[in-house]
Amino acid sequence: MPSPGLARAASGTARAVTRTLSDDPLGGTVRRTVLPSGLRVLTEAIPAMRSVSFGIWVAVGSRDETGPQAGAAHFLEHLLFKGTNKRSALEISSEIEAVGGETNAFTTKEYTCYYARVLDEDLPLAIDVMCDLVADSVLAPADVETERGVILEEIAMHDDEPGDEVHDLFARAVYGDHPLGRLISGTEETVTPMTRRQIQSFYRRRYTAPQIVIAAAGNLDHAAVVKLVRQALRGTPLDTDAAAPAAHRPATPAVRTKPAATLVEPKETEQAHVILGCPGIDRTDERRFALGVLNNVLGGGMSSRLFQEIREQRGLAYSVYSYASQYADSGLFAVYAGCAPGKVDEVLDLTRAELQRVAATGITEAELARGKGMSKGSFVLGLEDTGSRMSRLAKGELLYGNLMPVDELLARVDAVTLDDVNGLAADLLARPMSLAVVGPFDESAFAAR
Image (cartoon, rainbow, N blue to C red):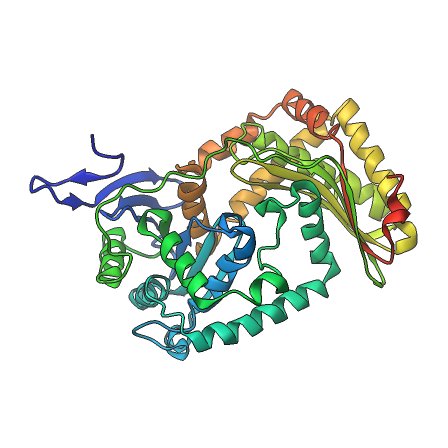
């Protein structure tokens, strides 16, 4: 029986399969084509726009590395812009910039994205350049050494940003040596000895057609995009035999997290950076809509409980917020605050008290309405540009295996009840909390916490 999304012509050769996913009144027409190789192309046609965002998303991130490979996915992201068999690094950047476009890329723990934004008339150029660099980069030895230096500087710069470093420290407190607890960039100890051969092997083993989703949004024609993608990939390592698309990363078995712990990174900083939090829920958990509402109420904006209590009423911190990170098989929920070192104890006491209060008594109907309004408004307003729409297409396909229509997503938020939020709060906020601190302290300063 043929794999889903893969059909065969009467001659026995595989052929592309296209279907319309939605004709959304809040957006454009969304279509999806599965190429014979298993590579997927999704587009959203928005005729009112004069630009197009084009992205190539690979289902490979830092969690797919072994310990000695830590940083390989990020290292590769840098190298793919350094030259292909057709273009030099200068030609890659200059061809896009010559038409006023922009390119960039980023690596996360579960995927890597390469994208360009151009005028609609320049989409063929963007497709050719981006497909070329992702499919056929040469990874020249000299470029490996150059980028190694760049990445080591990036790691050093990150170490000089305690507000960023504390988030990595918190991930390590929860996940330990699991890949989700490691730095996306790798460390000086792993990046320095990494060889071109190791990176090349990672590239060719991981960057395969079934693992790739191409997404585009703006003033475009789906059939034309598919044709251009096929032309750009013809004869490259991504022009492969018939295969089914890779399944999205499974939610089971769940990642084993560490017992609640306190990690302190002593640094002579003017401000202390603290994160208090716990393991959360994975991204397919049905409670994720309730979590969005709960997060908004606790620390999602200037009207949130934590912001009002800690900043507005007491002036203890300039920045305080809560956030949720969700992965295929795990998640985090946490509160961040940046404050004077002498105020850390009071900020932590107030944060713990608020989390315990919400766990015990829940939120109010008025807070429920405000939290739902914030969720819906931020989502819809986020769809005002082609880049956000392109990302939505790719993440739906890559992370969930489907694209939830806008109206359905809004309805799911509307359907969240007070019992849903309060039940989640009673579970989540009563969990043992880990603490991460970067500032002028040592471990003993938080021994009793």
